[in-house]
Amino acid sequence: MMKILSVLFLAWLLSACSTNDNWRTASREPAGISPLPSEEKAAVIEFYAADAFSWRGWFAVHTWVAIKEANAAEYTVYEVTGWRVRRGLPALSEYSTTTPDRYWFGAKPKKVLSIIGPKADELIPQIRDAVKRYPWANEYTVFPGPNSNTFPTWLGLQVPELHLDMPFSAIGSGYAHHRP
Image (cartoon, one colour):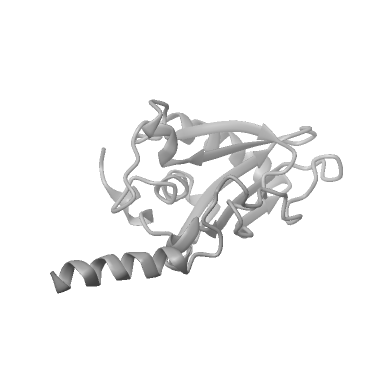
């Protein structure tokens, strides 16, 4: 009985310590760290990481990828989320936006990688091709993966010219080394 109470207390403590338990009201505002497409006409590749939602952010980050071809008015963002799978959708989503650097449900993103100019122009078609070949597009498992951190890591393995160095807290990134 004491063990059960201890586990329940620990679960309560962890959930009570989160900074924002309501994902519906957590900020999704732009962080202002990506070049605006209206100002940056060159091609852009950016990888972002932000603390995972709630107490999970103490240990892990959520990562995503944004690309903008030269003279494009918007970025294309690629991202993997588990809630999509629970709704019967693919884990991998693609959308267009002028602000790919939005807060991840209250957590300010940081750039993991930024490439602007001719090198980005050269690598974007390779990234698009790799996205189409992502082997776990319909799967999501928090640990060990595949998850949101597996996807950008897998892209980095497919396009080694990116020289992507994922953060230590990108839990699930090691899953990208598995063979599907």
